[in-house]
Length: 332
Ligand SMILES: Nc1nc2c(ncn2[C@@H]2O[C@H](COP(=O)(O)OP(=O)(O)O)[C@@H](O)[C@H]2O)c(=O)[nH]1
Ligand SMILES: [Mg+2]
Image (cartoon, rainbow, N blue to C red; front, side):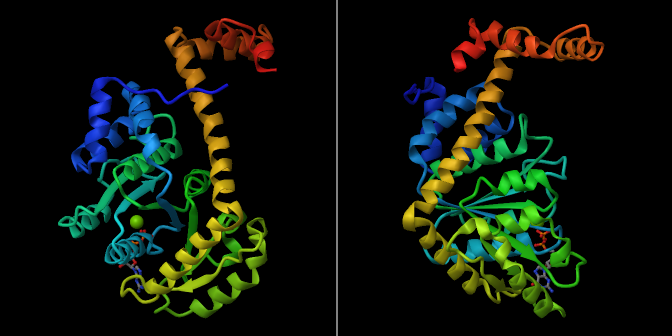
């Protein structure tokens, strides 16, 4: 089954067009639409999608205060020097604030204010309807459609949300710092496994050697990477020390991705997962359009718990109601 790309209505087409021409206000408006999961968002994303796929999306994660924002700033500056255009997406699953209200990111936006080649946007739990990871992925896509070829996605290290968010990137950079109690041993295995590049930031502090040594001892954890061994880069983000080495590591990894179909494989895996998510969201939307309310779901749950209703039959019935057929027969 193939669905051709839908062209949106005139209004979406116009917004998409202005966004693609580099108009920052249109980009901001478009991101708000996807953040709100507005009905208009789908047509807009569809219109932008054909104009994406060439940018490098770099996910950066680490504990609060590790220096992510400072490092992202330095990366943005370096990429600008090398004639790239940059989109920065700061995603905070722990914050209820959105749209640029995250402290520090305001300061950053002011710093890059004069440069239209750097676009910064904050995103938080409250703003993102239908999942932060989904909204972040869509926002990154819009930034890319607006012509940015380096998308930096910064997210705070707090667990599954963070993993979901960095997994939408092509490259994942994990930042550690000496003496913050987040010794390598205490870092969640899930985070170590997704790292393509390790950064030991705040190397002006004591203990950087130990963090680096521990990381190197654990490099074998990144076994899912095949021939790539995640390097350890030492930085002092606040002075810019080590940033060139980090950019070099990013470029090395980007080159590795382009060899033997690694990038294609990674992106296909991402789309497999995202498609499932999108279908799930679409089904829920269909159910809501069909009149299902949160109270109905609560009623079902109550009856099911009391063994007055069969959840397996209910789920099939619900899907059948919106697809007009037997879900199982159709799926097989
Ligand atoms: N000493 C030192 N301080 C740093 C370094 N990098 C960042 N900082 C400081 O650490 C604090 C937190 O940095 P920030 O980038 O906001 O961290 P984030 O929460 O991970 O985004 C700020 O005061 C930075 O100036 C570094 O390499 N050395
Ligand atoms: Mg930050």
